[in-house]
Image (tube, one colour):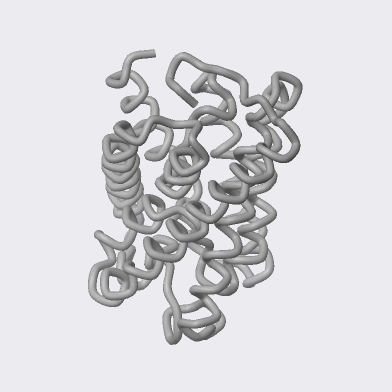
Length: 243
């Protein structure tokens, strides 16, 4: 598949992920209890990613996440020259997804982006349960590391690729069940950027963490996968896009 088409897939898939995932809270006129809110949001993101992966027809090769792209590039399974275009397409897609969500949510009387926060990620006073910067940073690194490593492993053989879309979506949902009370669930810099641009102020001030930590976790996962694959002689499945 040519780069242009792959970028279109990345942009569209990330837009869908942000719209569907953040809509679980932004479009809820009567906010549910915290526990139910966490479950709904985690399920929305996990199902959205599963649908996007299946729709892309390249189950484990579609990224929809800058941290995943970095992980694949570091692991040697993705051309480094394509990393920057992928990150740009994912970020633009996330912004478009958030823009659509704001437009839809604005149709409800009394809706306010500042009050809703669109599921923006944050720490300290802007963490759903007041987690400090250090704790949020550590969780973002760890959660992204697990997700990206799992992504790489699920795309490493033909047998695993058959269930990769569903498994990767389930992995994201599980991670978000843990991360949403801490930071509203990040582990994806593009997902964090889309809502933050519309919420502004504190969301933009704290956005740096939700780029730095996930990219660090993704890169670490790429390094670990590379070491593990050498020792176990995993032979990655080839694909036309270099993944």
